[in-house]
Image 1 (tube, protein in one colour):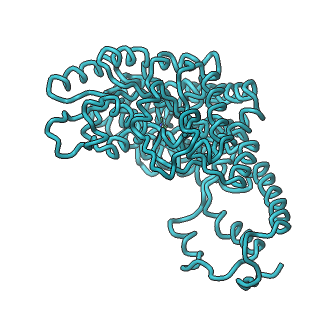
Image 2: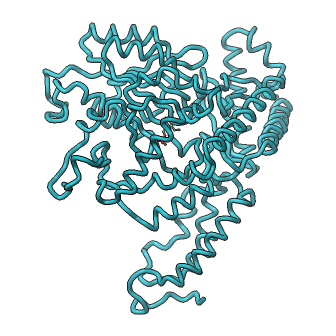
Image 3: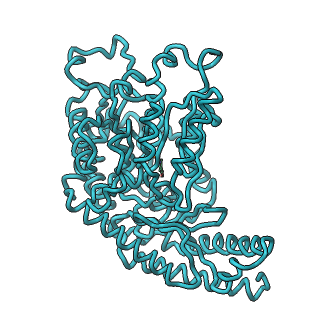
Length: 511
Ligand code: PLP
């Protein structure tokens, strides 16, 4: 095929079927090769800000380009700027998988291009959504009265949950009157732990509660919300004129995957009539394993809960499962039906547009249905068990190595640790505070350099957090292409580079 742009008058309408078929077959081959050999690429993009933008023309092309040219440019211009989340060496943030069945389901959903705002605008999408969220609810052991709705992300699901919590105070008429300039409305207070995800802060900002409207509760030594301090905070706030209305508990915090004590928090919420939202975006998936059910203990008392199949249930981004025990309140918060969206089936069918912010909704349920059917719940369980077992093995390697230390418990498939040369272990315990500070600063710098060094290999990609002020490395296992050998390789790279970096620094007199 020629590289020359085609004249506009050559064709109107969509891509001809034959061209679609030929390119489609080629692309499926490309995707299959990519999934099998993504290790050909450096997992973390080797690029600098602006590099992809600079190689793109300033204006959209006026003329049509042949697919050959588009695909060539994809490989040459776009791909170098891609960080490969589907790479087996991806251990950063929460490792995820765009699995084969999920990708194919996504392809069909794009082909159908439906909008499931109303039951009528695609009955199958609405009903499949109900079915797959019902299946997932059962796999997680959640009560039958949890109504499910698919959202794009946990951030939006939590925002909707907190909006519903506010709507659960109808006497404040916030939906009708808003918040600003109303002296008769007390300031609303939301609670979450210091380790809660930033999406909760963003929800507070978006909903007009302000950052001051979110009170962060300190955590214990294992990074779990301390319920006795939550109880104190609620009482203190009530005495000083705040109106406590909602608590967000986290099952699997972003930094360490700690699990807040939901049963105790649920008890407090019941006592003070507060909405309990559970952010189980990552770790909720673990509850499909009987031995991990403990993670969702108490969640049957929650008013709402979110879990992300796009995190650890192998569903291509994005797919967030949001459950609500009081769907009528969620509906009160969001339902608004102009004449042009009324249908004859409104009284007997579920219109999902009524349960969230957006009107238009993609057919996300299709890809999750593919995933659940292709792997089966036994297959999903076996895969999660494998990830957890490898993470536990990695944690044991860290624990057994005198030059490394673990910085948090690892209940699921994420390990938080750092390099800490053996000679520093005792000193860190015994030296005066200002000397300790210097040693800690040394460890922070060493670990930041270690992170850069292992990520620069292109073989693995890890991310970091800060725990008790310490620069902490995180290894998250969750990609279906990852094998035990990849985890072992990550460990070898970490040890090798840690030793080299520490020895370079020692020779340079840094410590
Ligand atoms: N909640 C927790 C605990 C998370 O770890 C994350 C992301 O990592 C989120 C919420 C946000 O997820 P999403 O990207 O689906 O908004």
